[in-house]
Length: 167
Image 1 (cartoon, rainbow, N blue to C red):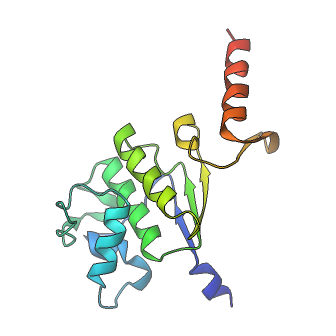
Image 2: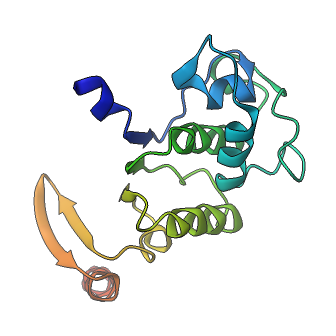
Image 3: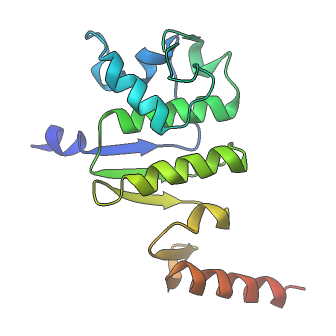
């Protein structure tokens, strides 16, 4: 069924959509209105490298304003990532999901994605090359057309050649 299929997909948009409520409610959004499984929420928050909830993510009751008010852009993005991880997806889609994160936070997210290998398939849409270095394969799409496809080293080399041709 379509519903069962959709439950196997986690999606992290560039701009997180958060509702007024607790971090836990926003992470467990797919089960809104049901009792919150705190252990699952904390696990997802740790995987998403949420550092503003305490060392073990024990402050999941922290309030969030509508649209993520009260959180920085990076914090809101990490809550959105935790939401996607909460459903334990087979397919995890990141659409510029780490663009508001600093390099250290992005590295933690990359580590979480890497740990999920074999368990889930990530698809990452990104402009930042450092985000793509962990990928097995990169498909460079420009203007709706595939420009080049291959392993990160090949794509990064191509990118550097393209940049030098503009200088």
